Image 1: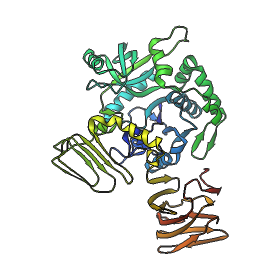
Image 2 (image 1 turned 90 degrees about the vertical axis):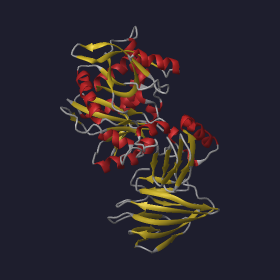
Image 3 (image 1 turned 135 degrees about the horizontal axis):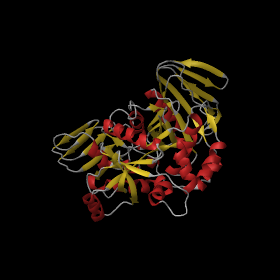
Length: 483
């Protein structure tokens, strides 16, 4: 049977600020090991026994398209990337994926995975997927319920019912979905033994999902079909019709279909059976810093330290540094996160409230809510290392073959100094090469372009000067990336 991995990459992860930000959310970060969470999600399906795997399909916001494409390329996992013009929650995202999968294969089984979750025991996960694939092959809609380890109030729950088949006693019919409970209710669920955490992992045939959407939410299905038929291919990306998708109602997989399957809503067309498979695999949705602390390896005092960190007489503390030295003395149950432009210090029991800081930053119009000092582009990256009145300094890295757009600025001039590598410069009517320790000046209003024709990264220092230095002072004439 053919399994189509579908990775839903739409979350913003604001509770993991300042590492996770709106324009570079947690699924793109290497929080556990060297892989980003998205890369780890794609990698954990490798080698599932007795199953054929299609190349991964990622459904994501347009803002993340180049970073995701680059992360898949680095893995050697070219796949399809379906772009959402605007966020409409998980039900429309999965519907687009089902429509896309139906065009390239004969009704594959969709393995639907959020891009920002952690699973430690890959073997246990793959065993559950094989079990789910057999049930999905027979027409069921399968979800995976995480065996609860504590009375968690931050997760939704699934109550399991009778065994689905005599041959697969662990797979149970879904009795109902439950919203995040209070502590007393969560304790009762844990004691009762038939409740599982809702993982957001699903398996079903593409045709089964589309039929279920037609029965439960025909308005969403119609909008997605219209967006799909009015879309087009754009290099590595699949674009859907912007206006049609903007008109699509927003709804989650659970609300749109799964709860209706569990209830078998009166008056609805016949729906497929809903099945929950128990999963004990070291799962976490890494929803906040305390959840990350729980899944990372700890020292004898319960501490997690990453980067340039010194801990003295500390206990149960998470300290992460992206650059500067972080030193903690005599503290317990703290979260200390250092980035180039922001530092977070929080009690481990209050990490859910980090979102309130992000909300305040947005209200104040501060860029730290949405972008890092280092910004990734399809051609490479830039890092704003200094700024003052009428000047700004950036460190620019252009990957081999990278080409910036042909552009000009109304309000600023630029001075470029090559630190390493070779730069191909277009300045007005001139085209020339610069090597290490050479520089050029781009006067205000001059059409220009920067390229890396070499085989090693090009590193440059850019000094901007002028009356306005915002990123929106760019007039593009040509752009190989279609921006």
